[in-house]
Image 1: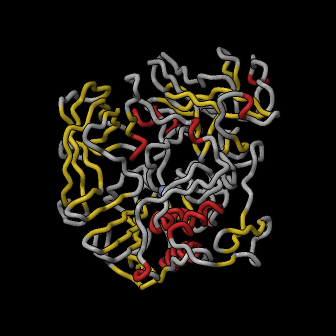
Image 2 (image 1 turned 45 degrees about the horizontal axis):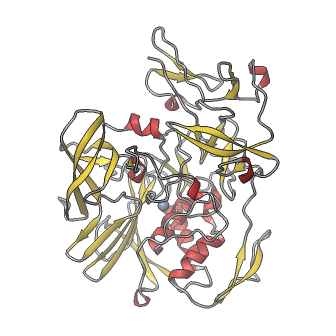
Image 3 (image 1 turned 180 degrees about the vertical axis):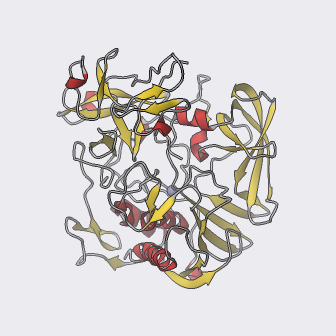
Length: 493
Ligand SMILES: [Zn+2]
């Protein structure tokens, strides 16, 4: 599926494994039911096939914003703790008794619900009685080591960690391409010199995702259970003294390829090695970062640069498996050798605010602010509160991210209001009512039901009369990131 993106990063909420970003509109569209309420009880048990843990939580609702109103709603989250064992599905939201939030839910077919968009579909309650993702401004400082860990650490007697590859392979790739991509992604982490973690390809298997002390990488071509918005999911198990890490790749909703530069934004075609490199970071014990330069960046990075590790990625791994080692002498062009407590590492430099970025190259210190609906152009930007947070050549301004407003650094002075399309860059049009150049869609999927995206990025109503008042809600709101757009779409019905 494809959805409009939210720019907001959530500090307090663990982000999913490689998962499509969803803004408030997309969450609302995708959810069967939206409730506000408090978790009143919770229990963890094995699933029906005894292959995984499920945590069942009951939410006492105080409001129902979409769907049928029920005083009590059962929500099922994958993973949990049982009898001293633990299963972590990286990015699944927590459901603690006493916790109050707005919950975006999707039916499981048995009367219970899952949380749509993983952690994105849970908006914690704030002190003032409203519900929102955590504030974005806490994410602005990107100039310190940003790595996080997820609780999984492989003990020395398990290293090298064996992994096996499911022999069913992928519907999109030859088995040899699958194996080559998987081995290359593991080798990237194995090569970090200040880490003692190592991996070993232990052959093929027909096993699947289960707590069986066997670490499997597999494609799931039908019956994907992690939510269609997830491109891949890593499950970590620490049960009965055994550790298992399984990486499942979503072959049902996505097409997989070997490094397709310029693969285009209107497909769900992803580079397998890039996505696996991120997932193996989770497999190794790492969580997410807030910088697009990092492979462990919290969102969907289809571009190939996710295949290589940033300094923060390497420092994160070395914090879990420290050993002495020197990387320098083999630094790629453009990287410099820096001393670290246990040796030296090659450190690249993220692109600063204002540097060019596009779908195939996002090496930003923050994120890429796309300026064309086809994502062929853009520049690196960051969150801001005032102009003082931006370089002198930029200004801080509001942009719409679906139902939320965020502030980011825009290049140049605030532009004069446009009056016609001629005042706007290619692929944008003038929203005359607000005097801003904008676009609101790339494909009809961005527009919602009964609307289509015309050649200039307008959502156009297909039905009779009414029309569509989709427009960006804020000045200069040409904002997108992560291969997805950030525009507010307000339809008249
Ligand atoms: Zn992830």
